[in-house]
Length: 285
Length: 259
Image (cartoon, rainbow over all chains, first blue to last red; front, side):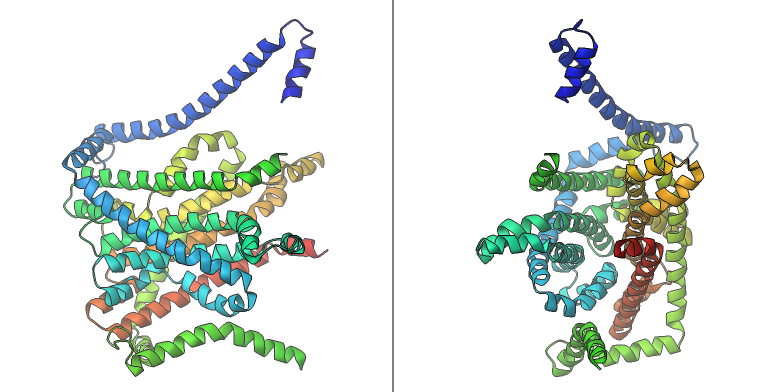
């Protein structure tokens, strides 16, 4: 980048000072970044504007799709009464416990199975069968064993989140460049250090992909489980309002759910950037 | 002789784990370690499966589920792949629409199911609609990604040979994007079955999801497990078919690697 500046400085024939060039360049970049952000905000604003206008013009039945402002109003109402917070915290608790338990099982197990190829080979058909069976098909079984309470919901989330992470961890550990391991071993590394300094970092991108897939699955399963058999939680709330034709409140619940999904995704992307920082730096050099 | 041994060993490996689970499934309830009302022995479940196959009950539910998921999935493929290619090619358009797509993708699909019920009623349309909605996003995002990240060198070298736009598309961009598109298809296929089952449990009078849920309500546990087994087999079959398709579509690549 510096060379670019200098060459354009030279081309300009010394008529402008270098510092001014740098300022110019900075301003241009800032403007570009702001504009890129603005474009994205505008796209969403357009959708919201259409959402507001279409029902008001009676192009869509305003019973089925109330104007956005009314949805916001009912969202504010739900927040004010504390109802939203109650359901939100219940959902968050379920999905968080289920997700963390799932990760706590899947990642260590995946690393273990990735390191011991014979076990993995024998277990693979079973894992494939489990992964490809629809998670929710097993929900009635969980209900049978654990009853209608919290345990069955947490358990089905654990079950649903395990498989993507487990399979991605296994493939990440299995596909580590053998050279890396040999090189580390030739330097007399201990087993624990090999795990922490070589295997984990190398398998990390793949593990993170699995975690993201698991997070998406956990929210999908959470909503379904809450709709099918629960008396609290965001999924229950949305379905409850739909059955009572409280349409603006239903949309308010859906918006909350989307925001939760976006937040989870954003956090995982940030985590991804942070823990694979070493990789990007290495590529940048 | 050696290869025969290898084949036996391979097939032993592939059935050992599942076989163990099935044996345990048979023995644990019979020995009384697990309540047989919650988990009947595997042989009873097989009997239940045979019974609903013979009575034709299974076929009816299976056909209903198959019809819904196939229609929703095929519509999603037909919509998402062309749109994804278009958006991957026109990057400016993609960068504007991207936040919207992220929003849609990160919304839990089933949260929108009540909206679909409100708009399309409780019939087939709302179920096909929600499967379509759930399957569209993974395919769309992966297609965009696949087209966007085609090696520019490939495109430049094709252009330097004066390739026409259409041929560039058919012979360079599409083949290079196929692996990403297939990944999207696999994720979508898995999700479409999850959503199918949920939708059928929530409001349907036919389909495998309904069969399982209804059997649980009536405490016909064998029937419930039989339905689950059918769903597992269905899921594995679909996955197998997609893997086959991937191998078929990317056979040029494997050959290139070997050479």
